[in-house]
Length: 502
Ligand code: B12
Ligand code: SF4
Image (cartoon, rainbow, N blue to C red; front, top):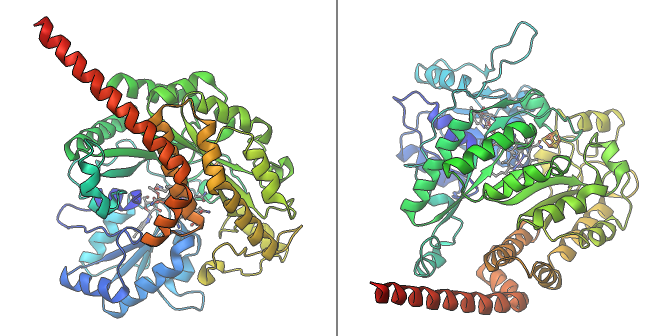
C-alpha cells in the first residue's frame, strides 16, 4: 500500500513544480541507481519521509543523495520526534538539509518555495497558537488528490507475472490496488506506546462527508476504467472515534453509492454497537484492524489501554464475522506482565474466536512516547537508539518477567502456530458458511500475512507455501469452479428465456 503523505504533499506543491514519487517499498532501487535517476531527471529537491522503523535506511539514502550534491529535506513522525538526529545536532552525522516538524500540509509549500530561491532553512514547523500549541490543519477544505489520473502501476498487488493470466478470468482480476484515504486526524486515547496522540494531538479533526465521498467516487470510477479492483484503507487511527459522525458518513456513502471494499482501524470498545457494525458492513467493509495488544487486563492497564477489554474481544469478532467482516488482530509480545508461554496462552484464546488475521509485534519504545520515557527513567533501555541498530524482533529493553531472547522465541511461536497449514485449514473450515469469495479472500490474506514474519521473497518460497496449503486451496478452487459454472449455466438459461419471451 502506498503512503498517503507523498500524494498529499504532491497535491500541495506549488503548481509550477513537477513532483515524482518513488515508494522505496514498492520500487526497489540501489542507492547508486537512485542517485543516477535523480541526475537523469534533473531533480531540484528531494523529500524523504520515514517511520522510526525504516529511518536508518532513509538516512543512508539521504547521505548518498547529499554526497551527490542534492538538497534533501526530511519529514514524518521520526524526524519530528528526533529532530537533532536528522540535522546532525546530536553529535552524529547530518542527514538532511532541512526538516519539517509535525504535520507539513502548510509548511511544505514554504519549503519548496525557499528551496527554489536557494534559501532553505534548517527547520520548518507549524505556526503556534497563543497557548503555545501547534496550529493543526483543519482538513476542511481537503486537498484534491488526483487518483483518477495518478500512475499507480508501482502499487498493484497482483504480481506482474500473474497479470496476463488473471486478466483473462474477467473484470477485476488483473490489477488490485489498496489506496490510503484519511477522513480525520488525531486520537485522544494516549496509549503509552503510541506516537499518535503526541504527533497529531488529542483533538480530532474531520473532513466533510462530501469531500470523502467525492474522493471515493473518483476511485470507484478509476477502478472501473482500469478493469481492476481498488480497495480503500481508511488510515484514521480510530475511524469510529466519534460514532455519530461515522454513522453519518457511512449512511451518506451508502446513499451515494460510494461503497468500495475497505479496511479501517477501529478499537474493540467501539465495535459493540450493532447499528454501527450493520452500517460498517453495508458500506463495504471487509477487514477491520483492531489493536488488541494483549489478552491480559494487567498488561492493558500498564500501557494505559484499559478502555479496550480483552473479555469483549470474542463478542466483537463474532459480531463482525456474522456480517462477513473479519479482523486483523494485533498483539504485543513482551509486555511487563508477559511470561514464557504467553504465545501459547494467547493463541489458545484466539483460536476460540471467529478466525481473523493475528499479527504479533513486540513492545517497542518509540521515541517521544510515554513508554520510552518510563523505560529510560527506569534504566531499562538496552538499545536507547534501537532504530539506528535495527534488529528484527529483538526487543530494545528488558521485559520484566522474561528475557529478550524469550520474547523473540514467543513471537516466533505465535506466528508459527497462527499461520501453520493446519491452522489455515481450520480457519477456512470455521467460516465454511461464508460466501465463497469471502473464504477465498480469507485464505489469500492468510498466505500473504504469514509473509510479514516469514519473508516469502522467492518463487520457490511461494511454491512451497502453496504446496503446504494445498488442502484448502484445492477445496476452494473446486468449489469456486462449481459455483462459477452454475452461475454461467443460470445466466445462459435466463438469456434463452428472455429470447423465447421476445
Ligand atoms: C497507514 C499506516 C501504516 C500502514 C503503512 C502502509 C503504508 N505504506 O502507508 C501499515 C498498516 C502497513 C503500517 C505498518 C506499520 N506501522 Co504504521 N501507521 C499508519 C498510520 C495509521 C497512517 C499513516 C498516514 O498515512 N498518516 C496520515 C499522513 C497525512 O500523516 P503522516 O504520514 O505523518 O504525514 C504527515 C507528516 O508527518 C509530514 N510528512 C510525512 N512524511 C514527510 C516527508 C517530508 C519530506 C515532509 C516534508 C513531510 C512529511 O507531512 C504529512 C502531512 O502533514 C500511522 C498513524 C498516523 N495517523 O499517521 C501509523 C504509524 C505511522 N505506524 C507506526 C508503526 C509503528 C508501524 C509499524 C512499525 C507497526 C509494526 N509494529 O509493525 C509498521 C511498519 C511497517 C513498515 N515496515 O513499513 C507508527 C510510527 C511511529 C514512528 N515514530 O515511527 C505510527 C505513527 C502509528 C503509531 N501507533 O504510533 N502503518
Ligand atoms: S487508540 Fe490507537 S491511535 Fe489512539 S493512542 Fe491508542 S494505539 Fe494510538
